[in-house]
Image (cartoon, one colour):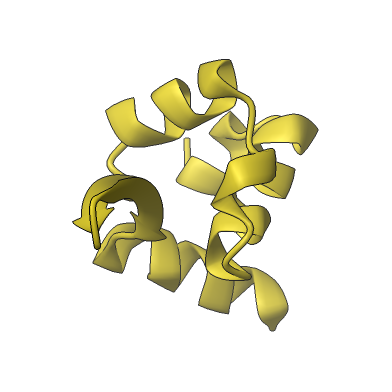
Length: 66
């Protein structure tokens, strides 16, 4: 089973939101699942927490664009 088949629609939306720099709209439950799957990571930036794609998450986004 590939990662794309494991993601539900709301998780894909969360991953896309992180990719677009809108991590604040991602529900904590979705963010937790994406973190556990290794698709995103937490990053401390100027005293605030944010999320960013990992290499695995980025490759998944790129493959879904094709």
